[in-house]
Image 1 (cartoon, helix red, strand yellow):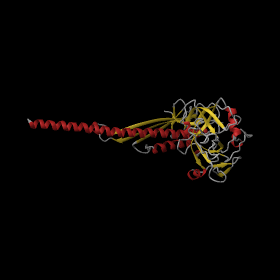
Image 2 (cartoon, helix red, strand yellow):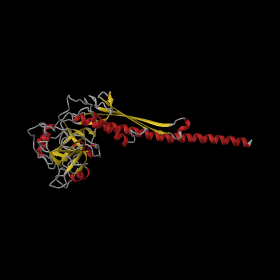
Image 3 (spheres, one colour):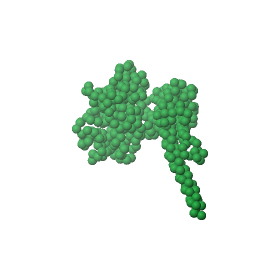
Image 4 (cartoon, helix red, strand yellow):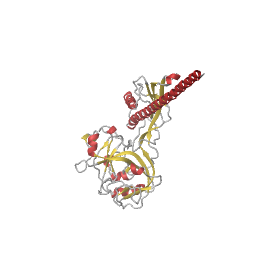
Amino acid sequence: MMKEESGQALILVMMAMVALLAFVGLAIDGGRLYTIRRQTQNAADAAAMAGTRELSDIIMNCGSGSITNDNTVAAAIVDFARQNGVDHFSPDAHLAAWYVDADETPLARVGFGGGIPNGATGILVSTAYTESATFTRIVGQQHLMAPGMAMAMAGPVTNIGGGVIPIGVPLEVINELDSGESFYMMENNKHEGGSFCRDPDANLCIGDPTSANAHRGWLNLNYIYNTDHRLAEDPLNRAFESNVPNRGCGSDPTKSIDDGLQGWAGSDCPYPFTIFAGTVGAGDGDFIHGDPGARQSSLAEVIETYNGSMGYLPIFDFIYMSDYMDEHFTAPQEPDPDGNLGGNNWPRAGGGGHAFLYHIVGFAAVEIDDSNPKDHILEGNFQSAIIGNAQIQPGGGLNPGGACSSGPMLYGVTLWR
């Protein structure tokens, strides 16, 4: 009788061990499946954004739906999917992409030789990755497969009902503001701390109190560096002048090189080019040359034009010196006023390397509320912020031979689905 009970106990222990191993196996393979799902979704997100950025550039440059441009979009999708763990050429991976219109309707496959269809304004990406199962094979599950899907859209940034004011504001301050909260967009040495202050008590001030000209916030919109638009023949190359006077509008409203800070600060000659927001902490998007000095006449122009109404200010995350840019980025080609190639150029201050370039990562909607145009201060009520390539309204998309986007426009890319 004792031997029989001992044998029963052994069977129960073995059954318990099998059950325990099954639970452990499910936990391990379940964890692997979670990791694969995250990998494939990250790949789908990155690929959709990369392809749509290329599509956005083609749309904004009034490009065609050529097979060459289609291949450029496809290459970006394949490259970013691979960087995120889904290799298009691996037998264990799946990657497919479609052009979509503003209604999210698929129009054509990307990279299949048919070119980019009219109306394409976004990219839909499908990914999948398969690995062999380990422990779940005992219950008949031979493989772990996880799909991913993402859609990105390009179009004009929403809520832009006013002009772009040529003053940069720091992301560090914007992140601390509530909607409707008053703050100083520009504060020239009234409070110790610098140009940007959250409130009149000098809390959260950004700048250098020992330098009268440090980080004033004025943006020289005639010199904007962008890695994607550094060539002189690129219509969106904006590296014209490394120094700009505090002048008003020039004779040709289509050329920013004719205008100065006072002109952009008002409504008579708004900046005629697109301004691109990049990713926080990255090297994409626009780097705008900072212009030192109080510029009181330009400040008065801002107040006269926008007081009581909405304006939009570029947001920057970091300020880079020209020497740093020279060491880490390929220099832009600077066209001269007649459009001829003038050579590579970085802005300099006094012949040295101390010129500043503000990395733009978004836009702040601000209601200007300032009753004193003579106190070297610009005050307003913060409304909302667009950080990175977000909050866009899908536009008409690619339209070769038809209407093309022109004039000042904030155009962005966002992960839509």
